[in-house]
Amino acid sequence: MTTSETREYIIDATGQSLGRLATEIAMVLRGKNEPSFTPNVAPKVHVVVNNASQVALSDAQLEREYKRYSGYPGGLTHESREHLIDRKGYRDVFEKAVYGMLPNNKLRAVMMKNLTIND
Image 1 (cartoon, rainbow, N blue to C red):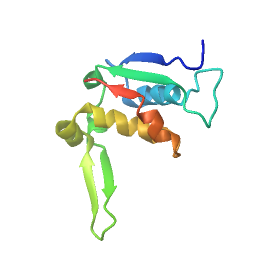
Image 2 (cartoon, rainbow, N blue to C red):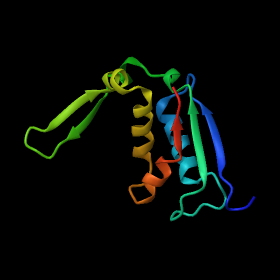
Image 3 (cartoon, rainbow, N blue to C red):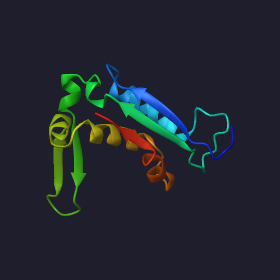
Image 4 (cartoon, one colour):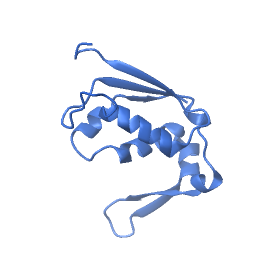
């Protein structure tokens, strides 16, 4: 395999746990499943997640809240995962889960561009 080839991983989310699936996706996006893992290089991989709307989420998981802070006094807002799914779909839930599991550096945005989520 040459280094210019892009490897594609297709993952089916039907009936799987959101967190366990997100860790698997983050590991592949980071390149930790390859023997040539280098922490300062984003691997040439593309991850496609199919059937994201069929992921297994319990009632307690749907009630969990995401928080945002605008930077202004009184600017802390809460939104439940269920409300976020109604508003934007399962794509944002998956993106937030994977985004939080990637390292906080310049490669994070590059790795997130290699993630495609299909409902």
